[in-house]
Amino acid sequence: MDEKEMQRCFESAVELAKKGGELIRAAFDKPKRVDCKGGYSTDLVTETDEEVEKMILMTLRERFPTHAFIGEESVAAGEPCTLTDDPTWLIDPVDGTTNFVHRFPFVAVSIGLFIKKEPVIGIVYNAPQDLMYTARKGMGAQCNGREIHVSEQTELCQALVICEVGGTREPERMEVVRDNSYAIAMPPDPAHSVRAVGSAAINMCLVASGCADAYQEYGIHCWDIAAGSLIVTEAGGVVMDPKGGSIDVMRRKLLCASSPQLAQQISSCLKDIDLPHD
Ligand code: LIP
Image (cartoon, rainbow, N blue to C red; front, side, top):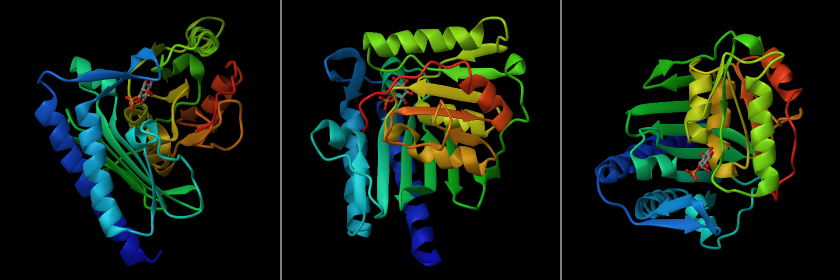
């Protein structure tokens, strides 16, 4: 893909994230139709999730007809979730749907573009707070146009770490969630504290901005982390498999951190679990 086409992709992603954010803000304080997915009362979807994704996909398909697409709600409706070497857009129209339902102001449109299974564009728009996080491969990361960078933190005992509960409640996954949060928060080497914001994409942007020092989660999906994975690395951070090795966004687990040293300290105290891949 040449520079002109890559810039056209970037500008389209920013434009559509903004439009999606406008739909989120318009519905934010209104009554919502809330449904549950996968048989869990904690994995929510609303009409806004579907409306935003439909708008984004319709425009991207029109502008980039040879590209491939993975959207959270399209996959939930039975569309394939296959990441190939082709240019592929990974879209979470409302990341933090539970936050959206409760008007907890951490709700993002997340749009990532992958080529040969590597991120080249990452856009995360926190709509209630009007914070547009952007990254292009090799061109740094920005928030509302201003460069962002991870913190200098290298020590777990001085770190603020994000640990999420997730949207489903499989007992074996919840045991790992519980044990991993406990291991990070408790002696002998406790973090300063643990936070759960409720949006993987925003969590990664908080790490990229130096507002948190690390984030780990088992159970996320490729669309949750696609855009954020580039924003973190372009901001100088590390994104990896929680037990070491490079990240595979399809494997539903992630560790990102401000430094390799901090990532290693956290990785060494995490329990692992293999979940069904995306
Ligand atoms: C959310 C993720 C978050 C996870 C939530 C939920 P959604 O995505 O971004 O990390 O902890 O349970 O899955 O479903 O709001 O798009």
